[in-house]
Image (tube, rainbow over all chains, first blue to last red):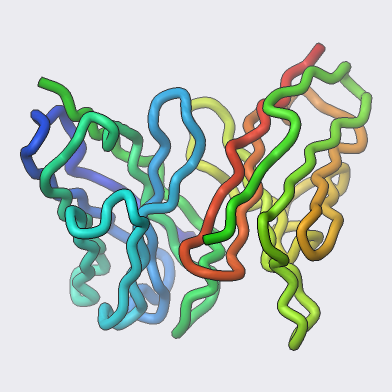
Length: 122
Length: 113
């Protein structure tokens, strides 16, 4: 069965960096686009970024563009989210999610990990 | 960018009664070449990740009870729970996947009255 396990969350000061990881199993990882989505405390879901199945294409929400970088290592079945210049408003649970369509992206998210909590605070 | 707006923000329904959640998109999410609405619904229970429930506006994901149904087209959509059960207490989100960036509604919290 599909499993997505996030790691790397924690408490970090404003302006600092953090890298999240998401290890995938149970499906042919190198044929699916992957996403990061976050949920801030008391707020709704906010899509963050997507990376294509081959790592060649990505897209970001305006709120993180220029600060966050999504990447993947298909040899390790893992995606990453490098978060720089963190702000208090980046505090959230970060979920990785699998795209529905192979070889392309549908932006439809059919499997989600349990999430990892990032807290940006001094 | 497409903006998704749900109503109401929360609702309390008696067990066995009908619950209706509305979702409106700022632009049509109907792709005319395949006549599909790029609209999904997710359920999120406390302490759990979101779960895909309905896609293409009305197709239930495998394992989703048939008391859940989705309807609508273009810019206006509805999620209906025909007979609310205790295990349906959750926050429900609509999401458009018609164009980047994908966008979620603000969520609707469903509780038992």
